[in-house]
Each structure stands twice: as C-alpha cells, then as structure tokens.
Length: 77
Image 1: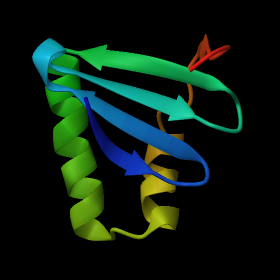
Image 2: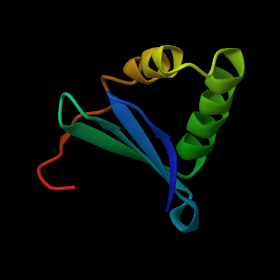
Image 3: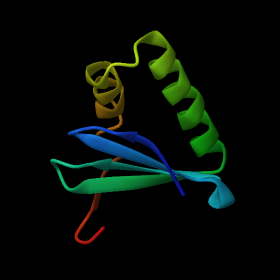
Image 4: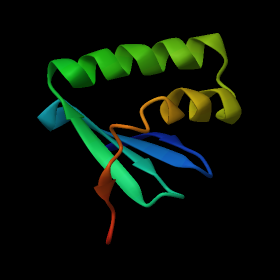
C-alpha cells in the first residue's frame, strides 16, 4: 500500500499487488476502489493532474470530478 495523495479533502492509496487505487472523500465519508484497466487510466489521469499543477487545490478539483463514483460509505477506515 502506498499513499499517493493526502489533503484536507481527499486521500488516494495505491495497492500495487491488486493493481488498484482507493479514493476517499474525507468530508463526505465516502470512497471507491478502482482496479485493473480502470485503475491504470485513473493513474494516468492523476499523473496528468499533478503535471499540470501539483497544488492541493488543483488535485482536489481533479478528484472532485470523480464525485459520482465515490459512493461507498466509509464507516471505519
């Protein structure tokens, strides 16, 4: 497990063995898990977002675009 990103609003964890990424919206207490090809596309998009502007505001804005997919309640994490 590798923490890829951690801000006041979101965190992203990579699970290399599962070829997956977990994305959690801290304020909504919701998360999702991308695996396989979807995870690879997510990773490429994340790298692009960091390349454009690595500020927390920009990356949080990028992650907010996934809001519709971040829909699993986080009760304990």
